[in-house]
Length: 274
Length: 252
Image (cartoon, rainbow over all chains, first blue to last red):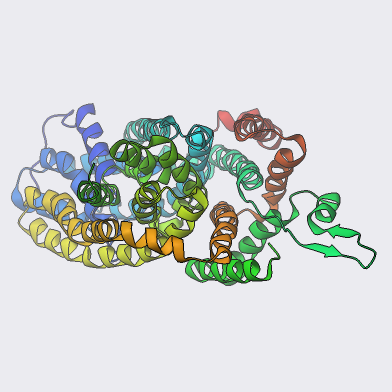
């Protein structure tokens, strides 16, 4: 079916890094509703596949194999690339009943879950928030530093993962996924993420009420003072938790929530309660 | 820079950042604090530009982290319109943020349009794969979606910036105080949406007390965000050892 590759070491470290960079550059660029990241993944395999398959027929087969539906979190997803490259190499030497597609589709779900929690929910807001004080003071560093730090950290992670994925192969990755290490990393990331969300909510959600009740004897009751006596920062906490509750109970209707906030703000402004 | 050049620059910036060229790099380009740097350079008013960017950033801090890359709102469209117009009209950050919100919603539909049309290029790639045409696949993965993106993205931002300046100026003079105040309320509440989305994405109900810890650490102990990041990380790492033991390291 295919020409056997004589060389043992056809795929160099350089090829693997190149593959990682193509995926990094294009993962969202060609993203479509139909097959999401499939096109970027296929493109990223080109430097590898061109070396492995010398006949047009084999190359075409291999390219088509990677144009099937694929979607994951692309930073951690590079580990799937590493494994896929190792498996393609095997396959090119000895074409057999291949598990390439099965492994890819099997891994993309769990990896996406981890990546969304670590790379997007925890790391990204933290990086932005740390440098936000610069921005609030009007310094360009508040924008430049996140623009450098976040990609630098994530590309380093991708680089390590793709080479590890390639060297370790599918077995060790599967055992790592089942083992406690991944669980404990996700736990740590989630705890940091939630503490940060709490700290950011307290710092940046600003809701106070100017509502003042004037009694008959001329004494006034300042509503915000009463709230502060009970628990300071009660209103912002209610806002975050209320929206969170709505998201979990009703689903991700972001536009509806946005609209509700807009209408609520106008009414609150008219009535003078906020 | 003239308003024409500023409008063109913002249109190009919006196109390039929304191109998503470079997975995590472009996701930062989309953020209002980074757009703020760009607007600061082209308008010469870095301070106000960054302040509006910082305020707008809070609204969108949690928004990037939605699973599957479905944007619930578009910080880049909001930023590429509200920051330059805000700077040129010398608005307070709160008003500029309120101006941004509708465009953030509009951006969602623009992205849906893009990802629907992008399917065409996958079918092109199917045919190129049939012929083992790797150069064709690379074009379908990079060049064609980029050209499409320009057609969709550039005109909106260019037109609104170019036509918007004088309109916005007059509008702000006409608006009664209660409208402006409702914008301020909105700007205060909207960050809550971003944070709530992130908590939802993290998705561990039983860990919510950590959110409360972070919240009241700032309220009562008056620590800043960086301090919360340091203490929070240490707390998380210690808890990890207690919960999973030291073995969790070697379990590869």
